[in-house]
Image (tube, rainbow, N blue to C red; front, side, top):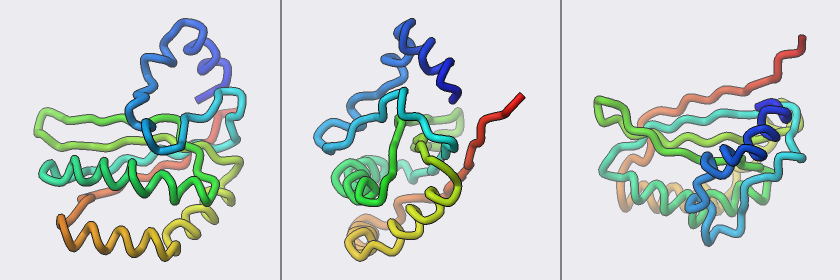
Length: 143
């Protein structure tokens, strides 16, 4: 999102409305400050099996955020969405300096032995956590 738009959202109070503080409670991670916006944002949308939604959110809160932080992930915000068919989605927006930083951070995170262990353990205990992932790197339009 363009910095000017984010500034307007903050000054009008819309930013507070869009910030689900509960997503970051107890994680040691907080949404990034608007002044520190990088050059590329990444929109991630996960389709979650409804029966594992709470397990997914617990794993994200208790483990994923902490491990991502080690590799420079900066999360703007997280959202939950349910469509008319009952499809549950977990959506979050990340901030990166450039595409290269995003690619190297994701490679490091996915190779992290602690993440691999946690993912395998929770998957064995609860089954599939994610049915599908949509991933979009967003670059600002330049007039």
